[in-house]
Length: 386
Image: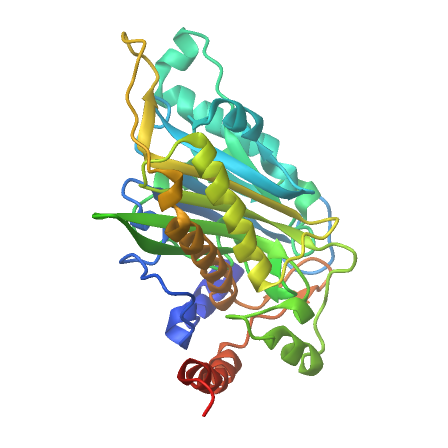
């Protein structure tokens, strides 16, 4: 059994937060509790796990990958209305400048490690040019949206191990089912609050008047220190920090998080910007304070409002929800973001990477027991003082 197979097998024993009795917030989830509950959104991964021992730049060990979020079947010809928010900018989402200027996304959204942004962007261009000959024939320029977090604590990042085939594989494999979570794709080498983490996702159903909408979130989580970890508001990180030894911790590098928000709510760009701001509150609930060296960047889109690439008409119609009816959506975004991060933690396996750096997985048995104890306090709070 190779390392990839080993970690994949161990991942089968992991549980999502709700399977551990952790129910975040008040809104119901979608059927899959995933960003793919938003109709048309697809997710694909490519995972690289090779080698062990001392770092040999260019030769590993390798713990990295690529994750793709497709906003719809053809974002090139049907651009989705989009926006974003930067809480702290010690990170990068290439293409975000154009997203914020135009309020549109016209490419898949890719996530990877910091030093592979350029390569992944190049590959997305090649993949799209092959699918859309007009890019070549009309000499059209596209700027792919590529977000990153630093996985160099576990991965030989400077070795640039991601190759075109891995990017194309993630693009081609994007599907509407429940995506893999934890140490997969771009999340393979990521760490959150000193525990192994990576990819996590969640969704919420929100009613506005007579209509029902879905909000989905996917995170690439790589931030924070153990002592700050909160699970549903409870300081479990402080408990684990007192008892967990023998593992490696990052020093003076508090990572980052890229959050992708999708919804079928009819929204315009500025409204999506406002939803993205609320995702930052969900990140804070888990334990981020936006450290100097941490990048908390959120990008979002609506699948309902889109703009055709080519139209003979100068006017198009869009619908939008009045801002005064968006409070429920704001709360739902916070909940889905918080739960996505927790899923990235509970689904990730313990991993050893470069130089023997070993990052523990969150002990889900202990989490379940601690949360059961806290749930009694919840019941008492709801019942009021006697």
